[in-house]
Length: 171
Image: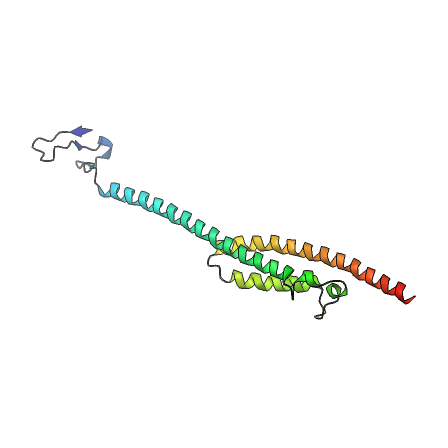
């Protein structure tokens, strides 16, 4: 309930507390527009909006960093596949099946890919970036593994054809 106070130099009605806010003969202070309570509420609202803006900004940063890391990992995967000296598609026939390391082509490729992943992952700054990158790695690693296995199977056929040809030539 607002009352007009005679001689009030501010010309503003003063809100008086309701009877339920009385304490004995004391009354609650009149509510004013620029009270501490309103200032705190305004600051809390502003801080909430700032927090939302910072969270949105951080999400955009994380997305950009993960995309960059994904591009780097994709480049590493393509290098493992197409490199003219070491790419797994350069390994043909028996060379694809019997590796100097004693490991399979699949194992060699996955180990190299994991090393690339580890070095790129180390550059990511937040847990959210690393978690998103981990998910990308799982998918890319499975894709790479499937491609290497298909290649190895094809190279087994090439190797078998070579052996059959040598058998016929020596007969």
